[in-house]
Image (tube, rainbow, N blue to C red):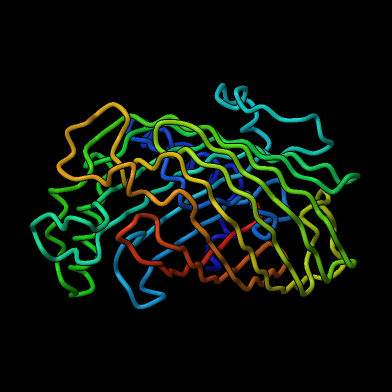
Length: 331
């Protein structure tokens, strides 16, 4: 990883901007990876983050099977025209970012070519997200908004990606992607709010959070709580010059989701030609999710490993467990 430090901030900024501009015509909102939570806080106004999630960490290969998230946070993103659409309270400190994400979903057996009725549909998502996080250190609260646009379906390249990965790993080839949910336009808006309830210096933090999301891909609200313990920079303070180079902590986050619509299960709002989807009556209205992780921060380097558990999203489905790693560099 050392080669990263040989590149200047401007070089990384220009390269990332070029990638995003190339991908913008194919962008989509996947909504699987949410980096707004306090336990994912990075104490810098400029950083690059890579988040990779896969259920091979839990020895499965189904449902939410993979997520890749590339993110850049920097003050100049505030000048993006889309950033003007991000509402926020006038807190004392605001961070702006852009992100690119690709997510894939499969049924419990991806090797058979026929539709597995009663199972999860194949679906792929590719998106570009513009977001901001506002912090109020006086009242220990955070407010985040994000706007995402794009398309889901074959244009996202989920089948090609999974086939390529499995060929590289000499694993079984997927054959069901021709049955995936078809292309559809996506526009989603998300709002998050977090409030710290209890804090003991930099060693313990308990907070409550809420989220609302509306659009053509995912409509839901949730409430949750986060418990952090160890040694960490408070996510409810502005950027600090920590006297200690090393921070290490663990966290536990639990939430309950009220789901109104999920296009990765039910298909898109505009395109009704998908060969197989889950009907609205079979979508589980309340879904529980739990996440537990460990984080190590050394100077400008951030490393995280976590495991997530999600209860059944549809009537004939089962709970699902996956894991992931996250790496970030301050710029």
